[in-house]
Image (tube, rainbow over all chains, first blue to last red; front, side, top):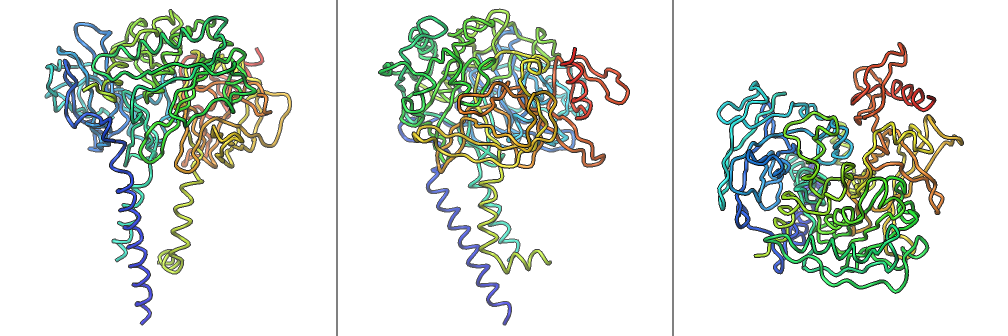
Length: 179
Length: 234
Length: 195
């Protein structure tokens, strides 16, 4: 007999939660899009450029977000475009995934760097909302993408070039941090 | 039943709690890693209302026009700046709160010749070159209005360029966040991979470029990509 | 088990408090500015006051004109490193915040978490009588307590400030420093400002 009121209350609470969830999803409309001014479709590259996409994981397999990923042209070091991991195609959250768009065709070095700890750049306080402020995982050394040699024990300065082709997304540029 | 309840709670939190983070970096509303709502105007171009006063002792309107031309010239991106009109009177610390609006669908630009407006915002008048306050709907990230305050007290000296700062703050008006490229730079005595020439540091870098701040007047590729990703012309 | 009984017996109240706690607990916000490149030492010298303080409240509300949102962040002062008039509390009035479904921000202002401790570098008092933050980037250094040792640590990295150990007076860093003990940071600042 004592169980019946609890179960009713439980059901009511759960129903209420799901109702709120439905309302929010219906009202939110999926994240900032509108018919007049839509953002690009997932995976679409900008005209006259390519993209690089991959993910960042730690040595013990955790996906890492807010890692700064930079593509640097091999022919011209001043051509640099960057993005953060955690933001995937169409600017939606994708755990550990990064995408760098608008990259002119050519060969690039791709690197990752943590920004916290760089006092002249940014620090944890500023990124505390995006980054777990006490995360012990963001302590990796800067490193280049090393292709098949990519691992948690690879030599950070080792690198392989990443080729970008107009209209295409170069996938699988995945990093494993050396924690 | 308990597991279902916790699942419901978790789902509720996932769908309703946003956090701040950055991209190209694009401002967003998120307060957790579970959801992002990126900031953007629902329609472009966006009109501007400009302080009729001076900036750092010179013409401010010309500087705003120059910054608009820069952002309107990005390939593969929509025209962002619309028409410019002047406020009916000089904007000062005494009237900026009544004259400007942060949610009326326009970008309001204030030339703060004394630094008092910047101070009224709680920020340092001795180091803050410019501020962009972006107002938007917390649920969908739609930008409703922007207030830009340019600090004429220090702009034009202290190795800072008014047009570079205006270009930077205008970038925030479109929803761009700061870019760290340039912070990893040998000239800052900070070790890092692939340093970039100061002339190539993106306009959305958060600090003035002491070597020559006029470099910030032109957009670099990362700035352009950020805009064309967010406001594609096709 | 006890907790689940409490929850079961106070479901609705728990739900309301749980949701509301997320609304009011978070003092953090962010801003977008461009500012001069300065070292922490530069900022310390330029500051009119430097204090160690704990955030005790944060409230956002519209101004009288209904055009801008300001957030009032109140701190309890625990130590004064620089400044003429030591006080028990101070309140910053900072542009931006959220009221209802409207949020106004300028990305990159320091984040203030309720109960969080910070070292504040303060600039001149503005016309409304509130102190300003001396710097966006270096205006607030976060302080956290090491769970294992109980020591307070300044977790925000610093630059351009010579850091000395208070107990030995030996210099431990002259360029970049991270994870400095609060007592050493305070000692180093006082040493630098007295030179």
